[in-house]
Length: 416
Ligand code: ADP
Ligand code: MG
Image (cartoon, rainbow, N blue to C red; front, top):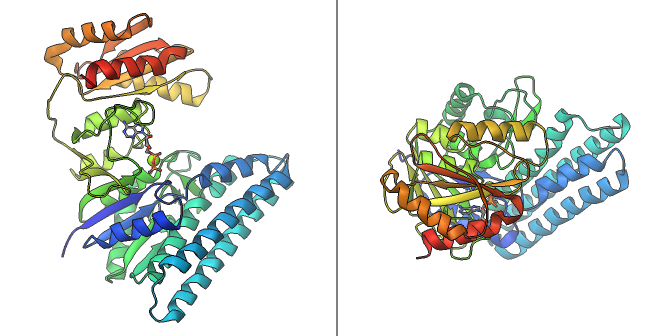
């Protein structure tokens, strides 16, 4: 039997009924797809904002909940009107009704949490995670119903059944052995042709508390599932055609990189490239699964292929940055500092920008350093340090000049 391809669709891909249609059309091209989706665009942030204001401003919190509900209602109606197939019309009606039922139920759950927060007078971590999971619970259930309304065989999978985690709220660690056996059991039970559709990001502890894998955690869910299945590849579908030489929203001349190693991609993610959750590649590389990054708006573009192979080409492959990465004290600061220590000898300073170059050619270190010093010109370089492998270089500049420094470096190194 064909192996699975895990397809993960991010927030922008889940933006409106038209992108949902794209998601389903892309899915339909695969022989054995397994779909993992994020919440619809902006929903998770909005949910957390609602939870955070519920104690002090319950009216505002309720308004936010209503906005989320209304947006999803509009999306479903739009999808059903435009894309549900004229087959047995009862199935379309049935699915639309099912969607509205799911939406009502999850909206009620959300309002219940908001009330509880108001009564308690404050928001605890456990409730925050329960609220945050609602976006993916909603998007995945609704997408599975819309897929059926569009004539596909799809079946919703509750991530709580599969993604067992510890109880570190806000960024829990997955229990991979549990996930593996739960996925195998599910496959045994199903044996069907329906396409599994599940929400990314959230999971559940052994005690039944909802948790999540941290910000942007849906990528991580996809690779955990990929590592638990007979799987051909994990594909991260997003709004850009792969991993670029730098964030294309910041640097106009950035271009997609055809191939990266697991290590390079992970380093880039740690350095701040938002396109991948930094933990994504761990389970995939352990199983030597290919990870591809692809664009839903340009599905024919080759995207980026991430594998265990390190190909050396050129002076440097990509760069990323974290601006003002260390302004507030707290767990984030500590974690970032530890992450960077693992990669090289970078020190962490307050009010600075950290720029990381990955995939440097160790034999051309001198040339690279000369060129980047020249490119920076009058921007003061606070520190510059190579990782022990000499394949990553990290620069620290004054926070206010980070983006300008990134643009100058990119022009020098990639736009020649
Ligand atoms: P999704 O909602 O699909 O998860 P994200 O917003 O998390 O999408 O990631 C895609 C975005 O990541 C792109 O729109 C781009 O602005 C940003 N990004 C940052 N660095 C890079 C990079 N090196 N290559 C590609 N995209 C990047
Ligand atoms: Mg993302």
